[in-house]
Image (cartoon, rainbow, N blue to C red; front, top):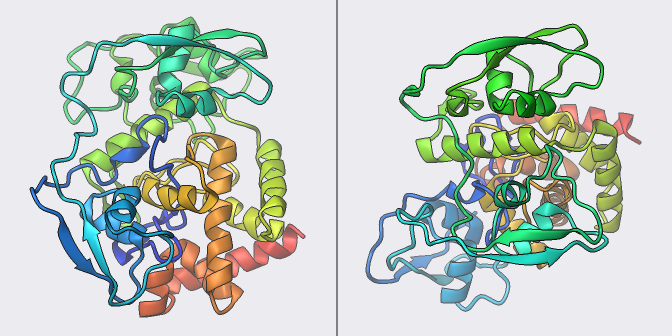
Length: 392
């Protein structure tokens, strides 16, 4: 589940989420995906940067806290995926807007009539708002279900606040609990709505797995107060500790995915096959990577904020967005797969062999080139190649 990419990854990011090459949609990823590099210090003059061996724009962006788009614009890059050793880039370092404004503007709204092919995440990206804001404004169910012809209210300002996530200090509201015995047709999201609590709270209280799986006759503990401060994602993974900002974003994204619901395993597999074929990537490779990374579970989010089925981190998602020519929302199942497959396609095209391409998705192409494959990377590659034979 690493943050990686064809050269976007760093050794530090190797912690278990290797492949999540951050395919965020640099520009408008719904929810909290954009907080990976949120704490850069504002300077007052642009800074020159000379490209070194193994550098990519997305790696430089992750390191400096500046978006790929901003670096590409300041450096007049026609193609941000093509830079050369010794090339002089300009890193914009003027004051940057904070990720979460301290005084959000008063919310305003517009309307949108649903047409064939629309999804809430695509509508959110179109209007530069969030899935959470649209779901709340229209009182959509846990699946964020919409229908053709439905008129949606779209919050267009003050809608970028991320869902409530766990805080470092305990909630000041005393939590109380009740119990619920699971019956046929129950889902965690429906139970949460019934008791006016959250999916995150029920998952945490009952130590459910990442699928929020429950069974008939199971007795669940239902937190009924103070339930919004549950931590779903810890701050460590594979021995590496991540910053509070990254983990908070990961928790917000995890909670949102659990709340709105995700496709089934078979649906995700079908999406991967279709997407891989359309983008010229071996479907067996894409399926093997997805299974190794998440088990086709789109609610998977790592401590590094690697998101969804393909486990892509926001900075790599930004790079993938540029490769496909549109903003990708990593919370959206289709966009998440597009991001991962785009990264795989780039790695296969630029690597000397398939093993190196697979290693690049996990460890990062630049790191593989510089250091060779680490022992855990070799195991990862072997696992993926074995899985490929099963998916043919």
